[in-house]
Length: 274
Image (cartoon, rainbow, N blue to C red):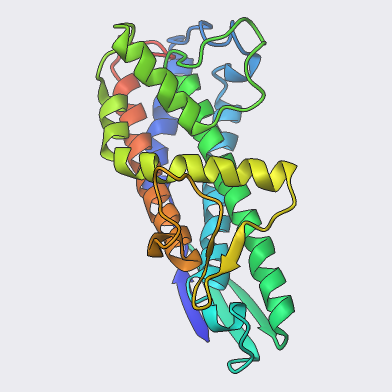
C-alpha cells in the first residue's frame, strides 16, 4: 500500500500564544504565584517555546504511527490468516517543505502482530505524554488547578485528574465557567469516553506486560478499556477506529485549547498566570 500524508502543524494557533507570552515577559506582567508551588511552572520563554515545539513533535509522531500502522491495519493477519502476506506499507510524510519516506514489509504474521503491538504501546505512551504536557502548559498560563504544597506535587498530572480538579474548584466557587472551561466542555464526550481508557493503558504499559490487544476472530481490538465507556463488542475498540478517534479529537482539542489559553491571558491588564 502506498500512502502520502501531510502532517499536522499547530503554528497558526501556537504562534499568537507565543507572541502573547513574550509580550507579558517583556512588560513584566508575570507573577510567580504558580512557580512558588512548582519550579517547573516558571514563565520562561525558552521553556515555553520548547514545550510548544515538543507538543507538536509528539503529535506528529502519533500521526505517523497511526498512518503507518493502524489506519489500514490488516485485521485478517492479526486474526491468524496468512492469505494477505506479505504486508507492505510505503508512506511519504510531508512536514512543510520536508518529505520523510518510510517503507516496511512483513512476511510473517507473528512478527506483524509484534510490530503492531509495540507501536500501539508507543502511540498510547506518547498520547498520554501529550496530555500531561497540555496540563503543564495550562498551569503555566493560568492559576493552578492541581493544588499542592511547594514542590510536593504528583509525579504525573494526567489530563483526567486536571479536569476532575477543575470541576471541584468550579463547584466550590473558586473558579468560573470561563473560556478554558467552555473549551473543555466542547470535548466533554470525548474525554468521558476515552480518557480513563488511555490512562489505564498507559499504566498497564508502564507497570505491566500485556499488549492489551486481541482478536475477536475478525477484528483486532482493545481488551483493556473503561467499562463504563465501552462494551467489549463495541466497534470503537477496533484498533484502527480507536486510534483514529483519539488522534482526531486530540488534534482538535490542542487547537481549541491554544486559542482558549491565548484568549484567557491576552488582555493588557492581566499578568500570567491569569
